[in-house]
Image (cartoon, rainbow, N blue to C red):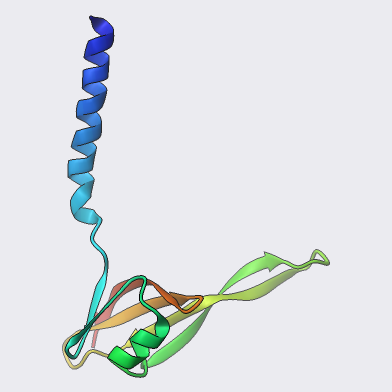
Length: 108
């Protein structure tokens, strides 16, 4: 009987955590004119839909080279789009030509 109660309690806890975390699992979306850009889209789609970014910054990380030296390697790019006066800047992280993250920057 005690084992059944523990199992039931475990199931209830898992379901409750799914319900709590479900609203945060939304994909980031960027609206450009009449188009929508989401994570997983290509950088080419971003250029076509949103135009040239205001700023492109390289993202680097430290790696160990074959000869044992620490070196900086390009890990992707951070693109900043100006959405207009009074709107939030949109920051798009691109790795290997694919949009990984879309987030709000400061207001313009």
